[in-house]
Amino acid sequence: MENKKYSDEQIQVARFAKAMGHPARMAILDFLAGQENCYFGDIHEELPIAKATVSQHLKELKEAGLIQGEIETPKVKYCINRENWALASRLFANFFCECNRVRL
Image (cartoon, rainbow, N blue to C red; front, side, top):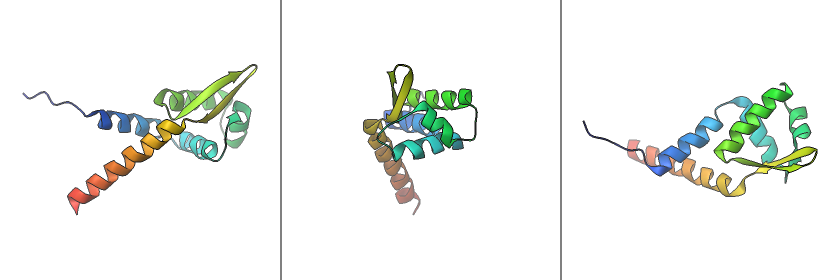
């Protein structure tokens, strides 16, 4: 059996897609995309879910590299990771473009 490997691009786009695979995370990204940065409390006020759940979603987004957080004791400030945001945009655009071209 042939050992096939996934490309770096496939792995990265899947990582971003997985992190974006929940409506609460999409709401967080949508909110943060319109801000320079904001604090956890601001994000929590935007969502109809418990603080612990917001924290878990922020952790997933941060681990995927879509957002970044900075501790400003006693608060944590979050913002979009602009470098990875641009990378995600390119990867998704390339993926959808390539898939459309092949199937048309």
